[in-house]
Length: 545
Image (cartoon, rainbow, N blue to C red; front, top):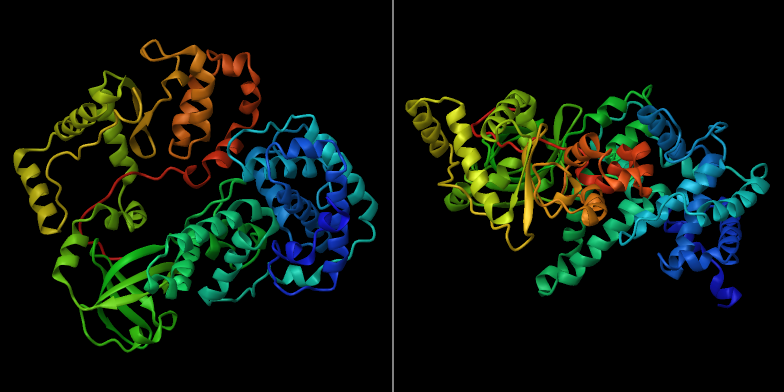
């Protein structure tokens, strides 16, 4: 590799910045970034790095580490916010390390150590790289020597700081949304995570476009993808959403802190237009029958002049400061009775507003009744192990038992059925699910936060006397799958830890014991978007919002 090829150029450096045009301070930090890269590639350790990442990703790692240094110098409060939030959760500044002399607001060797571990494990999911590998602290020491020599002379990047602030009295949701977008998709700390994830999904969208029509509308698809990701994606660091990071970066004393924390989930779906005034456009969510009054200034011009009631609108909406704002893309079409009937009978469409029902109904009480019925059906067990071919029948049997357990009279059951039909929500019979092609065995676990959960091919993580499928030789692999899979809940992973950690060689004899000290942090890291479990309940019936 020639010296010219080894250099990192300004275009690469600006990839992880919230701005696109170079500022004077970038010259200094680009030079520093190249010093960091030189320290990395001149070490034998760089060969180890290439076992896990591509050669050009060493450039990205150099930019990330240098941006951490720039962040502390410039007071943008990104890294300090992570440390503060980690301390709030776990009473220590960072995971993995015993730190006696951590210095807040300054560079620390453990910071660099952790950032290398984070970068490596975020960019690739094939292997888990232990934070205790010898080459990580060796590399961190080399980088830290450079940072220490520059600490007293590095310039503050004032332009950078402007991108992480917002007026204390700001009420325009779109300006508020810009901060969240900057944090998730234009910030060095989350670049290897949510930024690259967005890039990859954009590429996939572009690759799948074939029709001329689609190619012409590619920007619509990409904007829709970005807007949706803004509300749904969580970071591997602490499993926070962008709005939570925005609130924490601004701080509790900022007047908009609570407003950011209370931004609703995004609702995307079909609505009926029912009218408007000077302030609002009135709509009804077709699937649920809920009423939403949308801030008129947030809508595009065609909707502001709409007059035909019952026009069908396809919209994305978000609640900000107790008002519903349009967010994403919009489309309209004439009333279509077939589409309306389909929406009112769609479980997926009703689920878009589930979180509002959870605010209105006593969901915990419903799940408690389900849990009691589950234990009654399983003779007191929270977990059942069985062949995958029997899971479907077990689920059906439990569902029927639950209805009996509620002790509803025939008249009450009849009324419930009639109400479902009237409200356009009716499923005949039990939906068939074939688990046999996925694994030989599985388990049913009652998750106290969501309801019945099915998991396949991880029975060897549970050395229960009631588990005929446990295989000690496969337990380590099953445990890692249990921990790292986003399809398996946090509660199920912790059920294994809480009940069997003293009985599994993975924790008592192997390296897995190190996980126990930081298990919650790691579950947030691995499960990311599904770390937080939500109730798997859909209510029917028209409720005004």
